[in-house]
Amino acid sequence: MTGHSISEYLRLIEKHNLLLVKDYPEIMKKRVVRKVAYNSKEVIKGTLFVCKGVGFQEKYLDEAIARGAIAYISERDYQKEIPGFIVSNAFQALSLVANLYYGFPWKKFKLIGITGTKGKTTTANYVKYILDEYLRDVDKTKAGLVTTDLTFDGKKTASSHLTTPESLDLQKFFYNAAKNGTQYVVVEVSSQALKYGRVYGVNFDVAVFLNISEDHISPVEHLDFEDYFSSKLNLFQQATTACVNLDLEESPRVLASAQAAANIVTFAFGQEADIFGYALEEGSTRSGFRVKTAGFDRQFSLNMPGTFNLKNALAAVAVAYSLQIPQEYLYSGLNKAKVAGRMDRFISRDKDKVVIVDYAHNKLSFNELYDSVQKQYPTRKIITVFGCPGEKAITRRRDLGLISGLKSDKIILTMEDPGEKNVRLICEEIAQYVKQNNHNYEIIEDRTEAIKRAILSQELETVVLITGKGNERYQRIGTGNIKYPSDVDNATRFLAEYDLGGKLTNLN
Image (cartoon, rainbow, N blue to C red; front, side):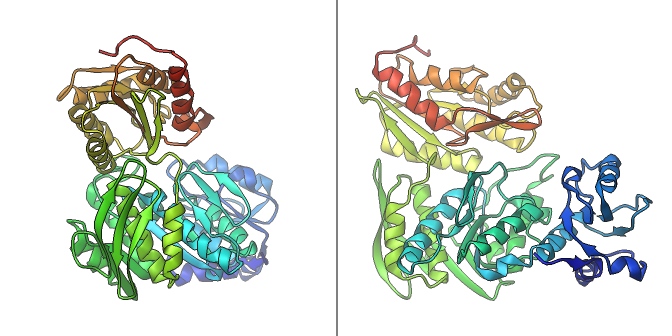
């Protein structure tokens, strides 16, 4: 990272029509910025500080100045002893200065962005498996990855607590990935990242739109579905190639937005497309399908069950095809692909218990999960363990309550990232919708205890669905992330206890 003058940062912001006040002393503009920060705790002498977020307080700026900030960027003039550069959008300005500070590192590799209501993490991992197969043969560094679960920068894997990191953190990741020799980076791009400018000023070589349904509607996310949908569509405004799923009711609007990209690649199962999937085969542990493109027509095998995973795999094929990855790597990558916490299946020794752990956490993913499970296990009873977050995606409480009540024989409501909200009150709200279709439910606030009760029940011939958290080893409680056993860990632990003869009373 080379030091840039304040003038260089201001010119970039002005180029994007964000700078509102342009008359500043020349001597100030020539000062070199040693660091960019938005967290006052990370400020050092020579920092350009960015004031952003609804929770920002003036005391944070005061602390930044005390620590050595030489100027600040803000949507408000705080009348401080250091210059304040006033902008129309602080989130976008932060992304721009982060790009410049780290030297636009994303220009040094192929960048793939994936958005959609469900399937982003799975699709991103499928793409990485394909790319890694190819990169291994050409003796190159493995592909970088940014998902809800984890990040990988070519050398180091780290846990993640945010689907798409804040722009400054994202550019730092890109910088490290480029330094590590990464040729490709795959990123989940959330609607929040697009709405609040975390990827503003970044161009994606390939942008993928998977699907859309109502989600993330809350006072702190998107006020309505239109805001949510339009935010996701903005990804195409900064893409070279757009990959569009035609198996959507909303595909005409998605295609119209995709015209902003230089190239469009379509994929679908239900109709002819550039990447056309057909002849689906779904088993209990694997699945398969054929794909027809202008370059090939061949069978693919997937190391995961579920029709929805086949849809994610077809999207991954579209990405790899757009990047001109040879077809043999598409096949071998998907054949090996496995994503922890996504349709992870565990079976008791006596075969009476099938436990499935999945990240399904919204209306679309819940419906597809139940459809897949009912197809695979038509005679078994279904026990579902789930919860809803405390401060966001409020409509999930209605949607998941209605769906689970209709499609489960028994529901256990429990904790799932409550934040500062009361777990029981969240569960009781979900229960109001569960009861419209099913009165066989209970609330067990502790998630580990809820999973234990579901698995150790005396119910025979059951499928226990544990949804929402997958392999995540934390819970958002209060204002922080608290270590907590993952659903995968709890499932294997209590299934082993069941196998040793541990059982609880009947759930009914």
